Image (cartoon, rainbow, N blue to C red; front, side, top):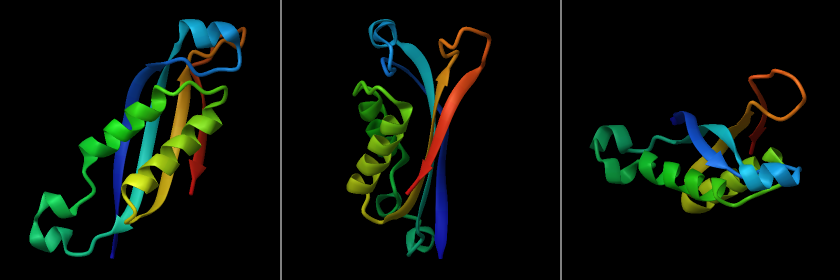
Length: 117
């Protein structure tokens, strides 16, 4: 039996972007993450040590957000790779990275990419 863990709207200040100014000034980003893994005996045992730890997942995301990239696509791939490396029991990761108020010359709430692997 599979189950999903979802962490929604994690917000970070980071320095991702293709423009020099973005990498100097920074911007606000959100990350949504959905992990699919085997339930195993997590529910039956009611033992958090057997589950994917949400705090550790958040820390992995926070660390990857600190690594400046030119594209949010690369940021999302970095997060997916890091989560899968830390939690080999995770089968799939769906990651959405959004740049809030991107510098596109007009009013726009955000631009985002979603990658699943």
